[in-house]
Length: 237
Image (cartoon, rainbow, N blue to C red; front, side, top):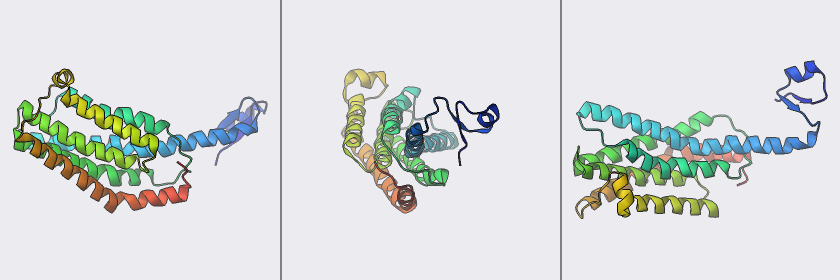
C-alpha cells in the first residue's frame, strides 16, 4: 500500500504520504511502478553473486586459518575475480528490463543459491590450491582460475533466461577472464603465472567440478523457488 499526494495538496496530506507528485500528474505513476519493479527484481538477480562471495571468502579465511595455510589470494586476485564475475556483469544486469512484481521471500530465495554456491566455490579454490601447492604462485593461480570458472557459471545462472544481450555479456566476461591470464601484461599485473601441463588438469577438474555442483545446487535448492516467484510476479524479460 502506498499513500500518494498531489503537489498542490494540503500540508497534512503531503506529510503523511509516502509519495508526492510535485507536478500533479497522476499519469507518471505507471513509470514509477515499473522502475521500482525493475530495481527490486534485478537486485534479487544479482544479490546471489555478492552473498556467494561473502560465503566463500568467509569459509576460505576460516579454513586456511585452521589448516595454517598461507592465504591463497592477494587483493589483486579478488579484483580480477570480482571484476568479471560480480562488478561489471552485475552493473549491466541490474539495469536490464524486468517488470516482475514484488514477491515476498527475497532473502530465502537468494540464500538457497548463494550459500551452496559459496561453499562449492571455496572447496574448488582450496582444493586446487592444496593440490598444486600452498604458499606458491602456482597454487594461487590454480585457486584463482578454479574459483573464476565456478563464479562465471554462477553468473550464468543468475542471468537466466539467456536472452541475446545477456549471452553477449557472459561471453565478454569469459573473454576478459581468459585474457587476464593469457596476456603477459595482465598476468604479471595480477600476480599470476601460466599453469604448466600438469597443473591445467587440476584447474580444469576443480573448475568444471565447481560448475557442475553449482548447477546441481541450483536445481535442487533454488530453481523451483525462483520459478514460482517469476510465475507469481508475472515477469516479462
